[in-house]
Image 1 (cartoon, rainbow, N blue to C red):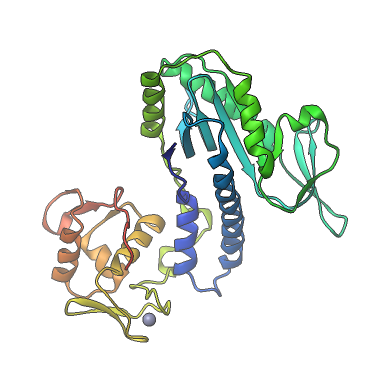
Image 2: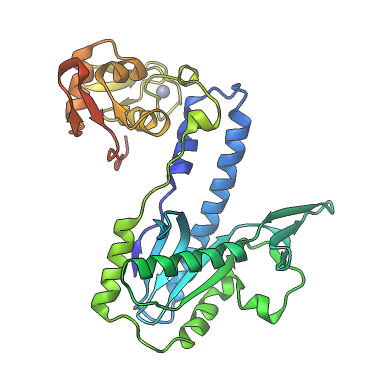
Length: 327
Ligand SMILES: [Zn+2]
């Protein structure tokens, strides 16, 4: 059963916000678009995996997606998909890459042969999962759990991925998506000793979820963009312009007339993702292009955010602000 659902990473949400808030003519726009494209591609591959995970050998797997935790030496690591049972864990790293692929185990790289004959060298997913296995074992030890055997698999999730130079030992570590249920079955059959009872299995899953920490990413600093370069205002979800203004109860787009009660929450989310996890009344007015301080105050109060300070100096914490509804 799925214990932690797949979500877009913070980094991906930040890039989406960045593309909304920059003019396409901005010099950094193509680079951000390219980076976002890679993330979207990877996310698609992870989603493709989900279907095959419905064919697991038994019901007692706990499935955790996109888990990011810290090992005992303070290093964060992110596991695409983690399966846990009473007998073992299985780390699955999905690679959504098309074309002819070669796992160069000696040189620790993944080589992709393009149709024009050119070679693209990528980081080796096998070394990465080996590292994650080690880090997870440190984590288990550090948190007082038994040293559960940890298996790993690299799943090739693109339906146009081909392997050149395969070997039986490689195929124990790498699988095509269609064969994933078989490989999970085979790995399951290798582990019969029970390390965790039901209670401990639940405790382990709960602790992993509790320790999950989304990654931080400083958009403005990374891309060397000034805050003033971001497009301000409430963006219309229908036409994409930033001419949405509050008219009595509704936020109304001046261009296409779309009305909404809550579209301004997206602008606040963009502020959180791109600028800061705290906001003051003046900053909200400035970013949402609102002239009235009392209107900004009403918005902030309606969000029910934790805050510190008083009157003009009051700072609202956006850290736990999430949009969980449509505009
Ligand atoms: Zn509009």
